[in-house]
Image (cartoon, rainbow, N blue to C red):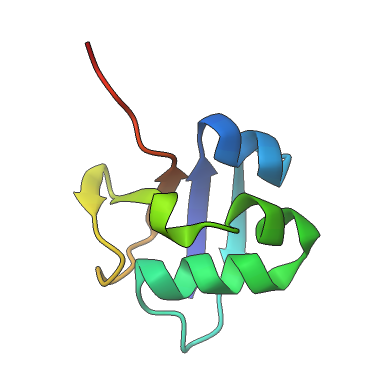
Length: 83
């Protein structure tokens, strides 16, 4: 599956890029699958996604949980707070 992934905050810093296009394997169908695949792909991913429970995602601009099915555009970021 072809995906456009955007990384934000310390996820971006750890990945070393703000965004990338990837061809994920066919068995990567959910946000959780994607995070696990990115973590196993290389050292950058292992560092960025060492704590997958801390990662938040948005698909097409809408917040999505780890079991959400992927779309063409995925954003991955740490938890955020507002004030």
